[in-house]
Image (tube, rainbow, N blue to C red; front, side, top):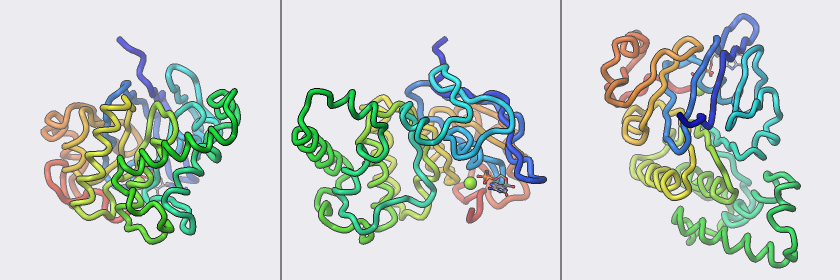
Length: 268
Ligand SMILES: Nc1ncnc2c1ncn2[C@@H]1O[C@H](COP(=O)(O)OP(=O)(O)O)[C@@H](O)[C@H]1O
Ligand SMILES: [Mg+2]
């Protein structure tokens, strides 16, 4: 069997008295779209933070392509081609849409990678190549008409598209998406999902997605991991998860179940 891209091994994290993640182990396979679901407070966001270096686990290990990345800083993990998006899309409000894409290679990719990439090319050539790539990216996410608009004028959904555009500006291996559908009207949701699917297909990205909208998760993911009470409760195909007794039970007492379209996660 192929080594999974991401392997979380017995990871735990406490916040004071709250045991947010408990001895959690899971794997994400290369090139897959894997969903992470679970009731509100199950520890999904904390797990994302532990994987991407925003929190340090109390115990356990995180492996990326077989390499132990536990405890590395977020920018070090980014250099290893793991990227994350946030529940609330981040953007540079005063900069134009195009500038929001151009800032990514310089700011986020490490100096070293940057130099290796462009060794031997003049600054001017580098800039031209970046602009060309940014314009292609804007075409892909269909925001080319808004390229000169300050990012603050984009809708919530367009900002999420811009976030997808940002992840296209660098050569990534894996992306963690935190609720790509949250706060986005259904039509725009479909657009975002199409782009996510295309990225997975055309750039063979590995995607790991937290999303409370069951329609989205069931529609887009090949594998779904269910978290409950800080650890992995179940894993399977959308069909298996929908009929899994333990999963249905974990959602009892919260509005909605994995088989319905309503949110099990409330407003978090
Ligand atoms: N920074 C933090 N400080 C204190 N408690 C936290 C923090 N982050 C998360 N928690 C707690 O950890 C538990 C898991 O939260 P979270 O990972 O956000 O769950 P989910 O994303 O599945 O809803 C919750 O009880 C939450 O209140
Ligand atoms: Mg959360």
